[in-house]
Image (tube, rainbow, N blue to C red; front, side):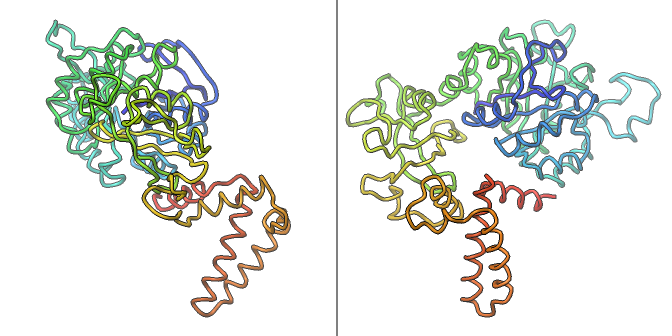
Amino acid sequence: MIIASIDLQGGKVVQLKQGSELVLQRDKAPELAEEFDRYGEVAVIDLDAAMGKGSNIEVLRPLLRKACCRVGGGIRSLAAAQELVSLGAEKIIIGSPAFRAPEKQAAKTTDTGPACGEFAVNIPFLEAMVQKIGRERLIIAVDARSQPGAGGTGAYEIVVDGWKTPTGLDLIESARAVEPYASELLFTCVDREGTMTGIDMRPVKALREAVSCSITVAGGISSLEEIEAIAALGCDVQIGMALYTGKISLADSFVRSLNWKKGAYAEHSVTAEGLLPLIAQSPDGQVLMTGFVNREAVTESFKRAKLCFYSRTRHSLWMKGEHSGNTLTLLRMRADCDRDAILATVEPAGPVCHTGAFSCFETGRRYTWEHLRAIIAERFRNPAPGSYTATLDDELVREKIMEEAEELCEAKTRDEIIWEAADLLYFTTVLMTRSGIRVEDVLHELDRRHKK
């Protein structure tokens, strides 16, 4: 998986060299998050919180509803982690607190420095974090620098406090110690971070051999060849500076991270590589169709924002709906765990199957709340003669909601409750649509309350 990084400082999106030197700055973080989400998860780091200089929570909050985000930076308490999860963060990145010894251990000495016990894997903190938000949501950042005097051995030392404080803790030993509490490790090669000089592959390979959990690699990555090499080790890749400076693109990075060598039907491909299966699904999760893609098809899908496939019979690229108009607008792509299959979330413009059915796997479309909202939105965009929905202005729809709510409360039988609940849901959805509120916005709010 390719993960784009959004670092926040002073309400802006920034890129820092070595964690301190400002190289570039941008606005419009929500738009970036929405764009980056097309290619993979988005890593959002609150640098101000990490450095103890404030918080970017108001900038961060809308990002969590626009993209699948993993969030880090200054998360030092269980309450802070749980709050971010409730706001929509998919995963939480913990750094410094994971390697600062519990208070009772640090209190044994008045000396300073790693040798006196100030730093150690904080097992009680990690256990409590797992209990609070779940191991599947916890990423532990093993940020590290090459150890002084290590020569060419590739030995790395964990650093904390915004990479300013050495801990004396060995990268590999620490990674093994924290693995039971994390679904994933985020390794940043601090020596190379922001320099675009390439990453040191030695600690990456050592980490991959040492632990079995997922690993995301960051720091200095500047070429597609590096991305391919890291992905070949079974690791995900997080990029920042190379992305913002235009040295590499997310589309190319996504393509290079896939395992094309495991693809089937190699004899049908325009290259010596195989084709990968791609499954298309609607935003509400309904499976629409499946096909095969080569590198060019994936690249064209991102370029056109329309789903493209490779035809095994015609031996050529084709865009779904190019002639019928029933295109599939691409929202996002995700690779599976082995990187040899792709799931694409798309917005269908019409029937997907050549038979005229909504999906190639069923005869009709499942009626969902999202489908209801889409019908209502279409009535407002293109009001048909006699359309009742199109006549519902703000005042009238609010009156109907109050009327239907009262009738629902008065309903006695099962059939009456179903009937009145359907009326109330319809008029509520009309009000939501008029106000620009999506079904997923309401579901996100319910999910937030559930996670509180």
